[in-house]
Amino acid sequence: MPATQQHSGQDTPVVPDAPPGNWVDRHAPRAWRPYLRLARADRPVGAWLLLFPCWWSQALAELSLGRAYPNLWYALLFAIGAFVMRGAGCVYNDIVDRDYDAGVARTRNRPIPSGQVTVAAAKAFMIVLCLIGLAVLLQFNAFAVVLGMASLGLVAIYPFMKRFTYWPQLVLGLTFKWGALVGWAAVMGALAWPALLLYAGCILWTIGYDTIYAHQDKEDDEVLGLKSTALRFGDGTKSWLVAFYGGAAVLWACAGYLAGAGIIAAAALACVAAHFVWQIRTLDISDSQNCLVRFRSNCTVGWLLVAGLVAEMAWGAMTAG
Image (cartoon, rainbow, N blue to C red):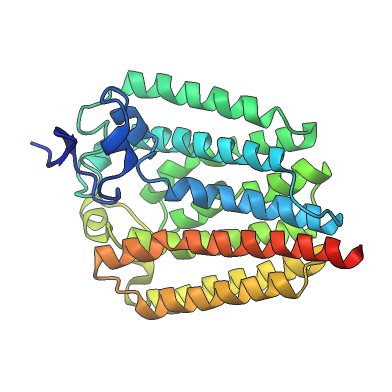
């Protein structure tokens, strides 16, 4: 029998990495809950981590054009698209991994392996989410639309990578941070070095934080024959994190410099670097809860850079005027 917990008088399956008392368990209609959990609506951190590079890239492009504030319509479109497409990606991943998920303690109570949602229903739900995502993407220019669609190949292969390589986190980074390219393209109608450097830095950032996340599953992964950077790096994880997080910070600094960012954005990036140091120094790879907290804390990275870039735009407009 799957483990359960009480929320509003109703039993719901426990998902270990979902925040206790999340809004899905507390407020969503009971019939919707399995589908919202399937889309990870009870664990929105992943959607935020997908969204932030879109916002950063958009802000960098608009900063380079001397604008005083971001295009709020574009920002809203990226938010809707990120949450919807992250949900679609999770559904696809769970369909592909349903047999493996049943053998992992952290994932066995997910909606498909626990029998709450059939595979056919999950596929239908995924199609609906993808159609919403397509409607959002079509609001941008033609170059951004084509660029966004080009990510689908990476999306398709990602769930299979942990069967063949110890570097699935690299493919996740390539896939999950594609928005760092699309955000710039939506504003500019083309790509340029700031977007490419931002994307490269985001890939390194993803490898770092998802390695931390993967340490939660390493024992089960070994039993099932799955691979990850957590298993590849082992006790040397902290040294690898220094390289990945340090590389991300340097690449982001270069992207900001080329886009015309100044001291305010640099100060925000310095705060990000300090946060990375905290993550690494306090990480305990043998403690799943410790790993989960540090993984979730990467939303702080996202908000720090958003705040820094928006403040930089406003300050630049004020001083120019």
